[in-house]
Length: 268
Image (tube, rainbow, N blue to C red; front, side, top):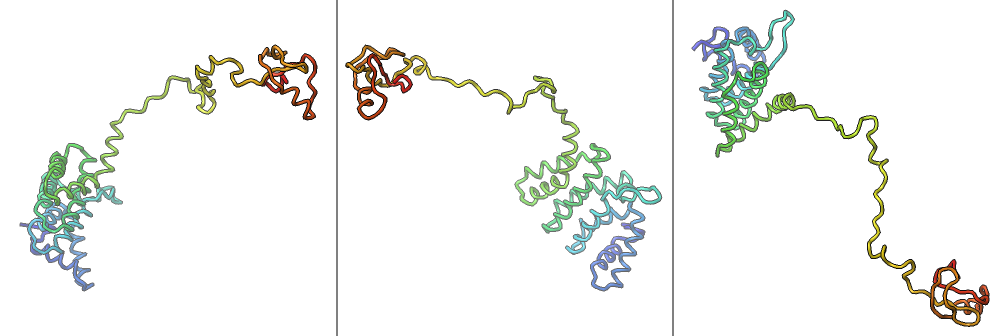
């Protein structure tokens, strides 16, 4: 199978291995070869996916997942006004191959850390593809929903990673579909009272207190200087006692003839 930039898949694997080399010269040569290969995304992205599916070296698969994610990131336009994202320059057929094979890579990958990187690439690819046309990847959402229902913890985790990558995109779509909140029309905006300015509710008096006599407490007896009186001169309280006489004996105001007293201080 022909690979990126005219390389076959074995040669492209050597470029990926050279990128992992501690030798600076070898790594620089590999970076230059990869830069030239990026001029042909039609073969570069499928080559990444093929190595993810078939290569036995975990380091190669891990590097391919990282490079694939970077390739599909939306990078705007170049100085010449051309799309600088590899995904934007991919044909519809090659794009379909990448989308379907990436989902298959999630299922077949045995290394957890590599699977997570593949899910990151799927999430980034999903954001870009669905932003252009929300119906352009119909297999993605059923795959995610099926993975969440799966009894396989690895697939469950993979679906959650993709959902996390798509969370902002989903939130924007939901926001666009949400109708605007209805304004409160019960009060005109210029006359709507402030809650703090509203009068407090009236105090409720228990019925038992409303029906009680004005002075229900025990009344002190009403007396005059000559003895018990018929009642208070002001309120008519009845009874006999010696409060005014005692007050006079203790040095208070003397009890006057005919004065009456009750339990109300102002009436004494």
